[in-house]
Structure formats: C-alpha cells, structure tokens
Length: 199
Length: 199
DNA sequence: GCATGAATAGAACGATCGTTCTATTCTGCG
DNA sequence: CGCAGAATAGAACGATCGTTCTATTCATGC
Image (cartoon, rainbow over all chains, first blue to last red; front, side, top):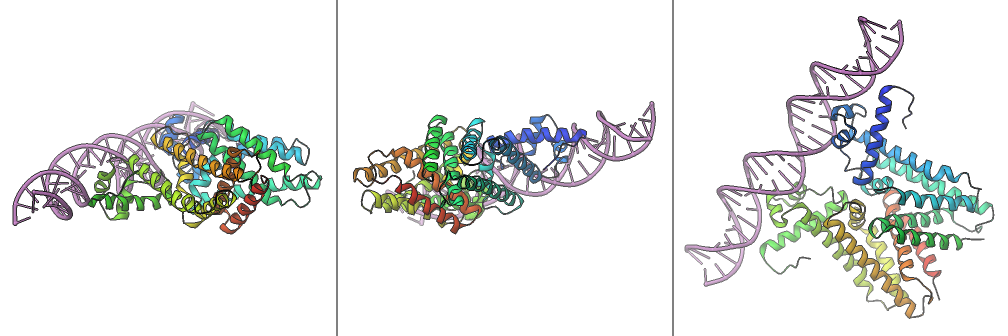
C-alpha cells in the first residue's frame, strides 16, 4: 500500500517494514513491538515511530507487505501456466512452497488467529485479504471447469474451502511434526482432492 | 494435570484456571497476563501468582484444562457410538460443535500458532497433545477399516491429516466469514472425504 | 553554501508486565 | 480455643510497552 516513489525516508520505511515482517513471522503480530524493531534496524524508538504514527499502522503495513509477497510468490508466477488445471496445480504447489520455505509461520495465518475475534482495522483488513484470496482461488477453479478438466458440477467455493484446509493443515503439521511428512501428506491430499473433481 | 483432591486453595486454583481459560479463548496465550486474570477473579496479582509460581505454569495449566475439555466434549461422548464409521462421524461432528460452540477461538489452535516456533515447555506440551489427538483420530479410522466400512487400503494418518485440515479450515472461516457457511462447507467436505474412503 | 523542511534521536510520561518480599488474614487440626 | 501453616494482600522492583515532546542532525532545492 506504500509505493517507493522516491524520498529518503521512504527507503528506510521500507527497510523497517522488511525487518518487522521477519519479526512477525517469528513472534506474531502481537509480538511486534516498536522497541524491538527499532533495535533491529539500529534506530531509536521515536525514529521508527515517526514513520507510522502508531503501532497499529506499522502492523497494517506489515500485513500489506505479507499480502504482496504472497501474491508475488504464489499467484503471479502461476499466471504463466495455462488456464485450468495446470494453473490451479501451480497455485497449490507454490502455496505449499510459500508455507514451507521460510523460517517462521505465515503472517496471514497468525493474523487470522490473533485477530479473528478482536474487532478493529486489522481484523477488517485480514478479512479483506482472505476474501480476495478465496475468490481468486475459486476463479482458478472455475477456469478448470471451463476447460473441461474439472466436472461441471464442481462447487468452486466448496473446493476452495477444502484446498484451503489442506494448506492450513500442512502449515500446522510442518511446524509441529516436521516438514517432510507434512509436505507429503499435503501433496497426496491435493492429488486426491483434485482427482475427485475431475470431469 | 491437577486433581481437585480437596483443600481450600485447590478450589480457587481451579476457578482461576477457569477464568484464565476464557481469557485465552479471546486473547490467546500471549494475551494472558496475571494482572488481568487477577482482576477477573477479584484477587490480587500476588494471590494469583502464588498458585502457579510463574506465568508459564499458569499457561500450562490452561493448556491442560483445554485438552481435558476437548476430550470430555469430543472424544469421550463419541465412545458411546459403535466402533467404526458411527464413532468416527461422531468425532467429526462433535469436533465441529466444539470449534463453533463457544465464543473465542480454540485454545489449542491458538497455542499451536503462537508456539510452533518458540522452543520451550509450552511448545512441547502442545506437540504432545496434538500428537495424541492425531493418534486417537487415526485409531478411530483404523477401527472403521476393521469393521469393513472403510477400504482396506485406507491410510489412517493420511485421512487423519485431511480430517484435521477440514476442521482447521472451518475454524478459520467461521471466525472470519460466518458460522453457518463454514459449518456447511465443513459438513460437505467431511461427507466427501469419508465417502472417498468407503469400502 | 545556505536556508528549509524532513528525518531521526533522546528523554520522559504513565501504564502494565512478571516477579519478589513481607505482612496479614484465614482455615483446619489437635 | 489456639496454634501452625496455608492462602492472600500489598507494596515495591526493574523492565518494557506505546506515545509525546523537544532537539538535533540530515538531505535537498535554490
């Protein structure tokens, strides 16, 4: 939500968000404090604060950054695949990579759990991103129906829900039980799910 | 992990845990502070503290309490159903009720997200409970294989993983998008999943 | 190169955190 | 009833929190 138009301060602002992003991955959004991120970037608390005006605004900036990273690493590359099953499977595969690749949990999952019953700006933005993600997922599914690769009676929102569940379970298991087992469970689940909807 | 043998203090200890449990449902484990729970039960901070010796011990007590509640409301009642599909479906149904019934998120889900990469006693106990839950789930599935209701080639851990994913997705959706839609998605997903494993 | 405004630092604020220590109140056994 | 020990309160600790205020440093257009 913040373009790097130019400006000296915009650069440091982006670097602050970048550090904060990694802190959030390890500590969650509630674990993100201005003092911690200030020390991490080698600035003073007030120096960091001045860029955002409040902790909540910093949290929102990190949330936006996470959504953008997700789009860049999962959805945008999948657009290079042909419409239909190839693209849908690319999304699923890259989504798994996204959840497994980096250290720390997925910020979107953290945000959903931490703010799902805490009314406010953050919760609303989480809902916005999650709604958009689900819609894009459903659209990719509908394309696979149009190409005739998935059955005409496929309920795209239902399938998107089940797909989401597989990713969530893999995220959960990978962090508690180990990456490899979680990945193979998720891969098999994805295959089974898509196969069950084949035309 | 704490028996209510007798004793005056054991009663107040239990009531403290009970209040803390509900705070955790709304605020998560990291949002649980001794001061807050003290005010909630009408005691002094040090009075509450003396019962546990540390905040971490209080968090563990709440985690144990949550696990016990889950067992009492989901698994134990399901034991009254006949081994096999009826019992497995009862688990799934009661699990959904558990996740939807009360206000605030599931403490187990919160704990898993908050401590999945924060080494320590809490993370280890989360892993213990999650491992046990998965094993019990797999055992219920294997029984349904033994009764001949599920196919002999059913991979119980794989099916348990996918079942877990459906519950996670429903928990997620219910808190962000609304209860009814999430419940119906989860119900349909469960039916499809079990049907795909039928003998 | 100098003035102007942005960018950052530093100190201080009230609040809350977990924890410790010392007293006081309460409970239950003899 | 009285006494020992559990149960609780209260005050204080150092630390950290988000935020505000005032300076000071920096970058930059003229």
